[in-house]
Image (cartoon, rainbow, N blue to C red; front, top):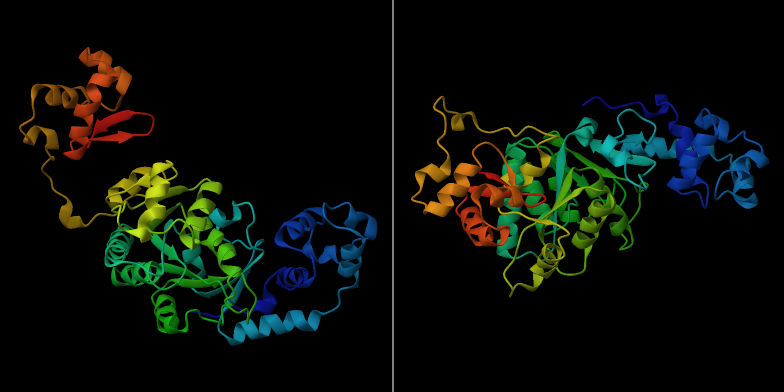
Length: 380
């Protein structure tokens, strides 16, 4: 992959400089960008104009006006190129649109690998580092199938579920993104250096919002998790306790108005309590297959199924192949013309919604019908 000359990138030096100014976070930098036509002008604004920006007081305005450490800015660029990474900024066309939509998008992203993959439709897969065999199996299975169907899989490069998701995506021939809680030159855990190299080699990317040399401090990972969810259409929580990074990522996804999917767990699995808790609170959709996920993504991506599954012969509806009782058959027949709300279905069959619930559940478990949002039912 051709290496970008970072010195030639528009706005890069100014945006790096702004991140070096004490007490200037990404939010205040975005406000400053609105106060000037070009980032270069920010350092030439007078004190009054600077202080009209929300959160900019006399001390910070003076620091901006007196900034002169351009050697440090160039050093950041040179060190980035030396480790064969690039930097994309909030103002660049390559910056992923989904990430730009969140409340607090990072101003700079250090990237190793394929920058374009950051804008691909994708899903985050997260879970505990201390995964059970069940958790690892589910992470591998879902990642493999989602990758086969054309989604990019994003995770945090941690041990356990994260690593299983990354590796299974690569095995499926898909693209995966690893989001670090350290500098792009500080791989954590170190044992995943080989995995990082394989992700990059096979067309994926490894990214970080943290400057070069940043160690993997505990406080970095909650910040990192908002990027994991922010890059994607939704987050799949595979296995999680009540506390930890996976639950933070799920909460970030909800805050970002993204989908949350959850794999259920047996009651005796302490590592799965968090998953069951999300389902109980209706904070995530219980999923049993990738089709449950693609139901929510139908407006964004087209599933890519194996051509061997195609057939010129129309597929007969599942319910007609089964020996259903009279009530079940009547329900399925009523749904042949399209989805119906449970109230409309009851009116059509001259039954109360309460009388239909048990039979509807039975048909769902037989994969004859499925329930959509708002108590609407359709044939599977």
